[in-house]
Structure formats: C-alpha cells, structure tokens
Amino acid sequence: MNTNLKIIIGCLMVICAACIAIFLSVRNNRESSKTTEDENIAKSDTAAIKKVHNLIILDESGSMSGLEQVSVTGVNETIQTIREAYHENPEQEQLLTMVTFSGQPVMRITQHYNSLNIKEVAEMTISKFNPNGVTPLWDAMGNMCTRIEKETDVETLVLVTIITDGMENASTEYNHKSIKALVDRLDQAGWVFTYIGANQDAVYEANSMGIRNAMQYNSDEEGTKAMWEQERNSRKSFYSRTQTIKSRSQLKEGYFEEDNE
Image 1 (tube, rainbow, N blue to C red):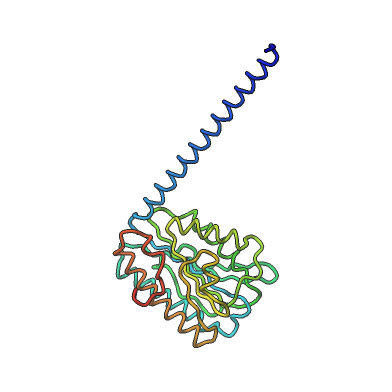
Image 2 (cartoon, rainbow, N blue to C red; image 1 turned 90 degrees about the horizontal axis):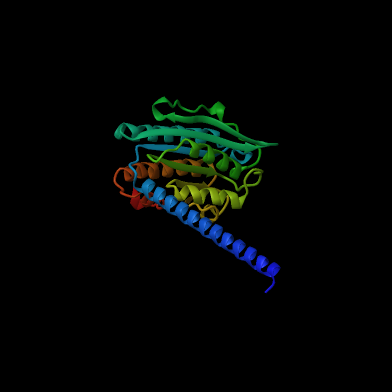
C-alpha cells in the first residue's frame, strides 16, 4: 500500500470517527433535553394551582351583529362568576385577559382586560363591542396564547375560552398547522382549552386544532344566552375541580360534561 493511500485511509478514519462522535453528542443532547422536558412537564402537572389565568377570546366579526347586548351581558356574568370563585377561595388568585377579534381590512384584536386581578375588573359596556369584518381566529389565538405564555409560571393554570359564531377565514400570521402545533405544546404544558362554536361542527373544528373540549350553540339571542349560562356552569365546576385534583392532566378533558357540575 503506497503512502498516499495510507494517508487517505487515515483521513477517512478520522472523519468517520469525528462524525460518529458528533452523532452521539447530538443524540445524547436530544435525549437529555427530552428528559429535562419530561421532568418539567411532570413537575408542572403536579404543581399547586395558586393562580388561574382566564383567557377569553371572543369573536367580534360582522356575523355577531344583533347579539351585542346578550354577548356583553354574558361577559359580565362570567366576570361575576370568576369574582365569586375568588371570594370562595381567596388563596387561589384569579386573573382575566379578554380580547375580541375581527378583521376588515386587517386583523383587529381589541384588548378589554389585560392580565388583571379579578378584584380590579370592571364590567364591560355595550359601547365596547362593535361587530364588523371577518374572522381571523387563528391569528387571535396565536397572538394571545404566545403573549400569555411569556408571563406564565409553574403555579399558574391557564384556562383558554374561545367563542366564535363562524370559522376561520382571514388569518395571515398563523395557519391550521401552526395553530395546532401551538395548542399541542401548551396542552402538554398543562393549559386547558375550550372551544365554543356556532354555524359549524364545533367538535370537529376543535379537535382539528388539538382542543379537547368543545360545545355547539345556536347563534341567535336565545341560543347565545343559553351558551353563556352553560359555560358559566362549567366554569364553576372547573374551579371546584382545581382544588381537589392531584394532577392537572385530570382537568384537560370533560369541561362541558354535566357530571362535573
């Protein structure tokens, strides 16, 4: 074997050894990262719930016209339900973030309450709900969830309530794939998502986004009023369950089930 061939073979062996070392290092790092992630999820799952951050994302597109009063009344009665939960269990802080969304010609997210302690929340007025435009649902969900995520610690449980009388038709920042990936990640982190929809198969739409809890309603005055009442009953039950469960995973499903009331 000539000298040049020996050199080439030697170089190849060095390169192969380096590649193997890099591969093993990357694999070990991934395994270590996955282990850390699993440990963090487990820690979050059993952490005491000292705060509930209520995130309400409400459709304000044009199809909600005519339902202004019943919608605002529903919001205010929900605020009262959250306030009552705090009075019943003052050791568990209740925060509220609520936005409405529409889009014409560009997305509009109107922030009515921003991470406010429920003790500081005033009632919403009818003048602040003005339906118009189209339905950038995914953009509203993506923007608000990523923002809340940045300020959430292990002792905070985030309850996301999405209410819409129509399907997504206008988002530009998020698509179906990216919003599902976001919901899946936050679900793993212990968030609880609920989806309330009209003029659609709400259960199918929710499941397609990775949301476990869904409810259908009729988008007229009577149906909207009944929807808000049922949501409040489910919310009361949910708050009670947060005080008795040992694992947050027990809260992820069954939000609208009557036997949880």
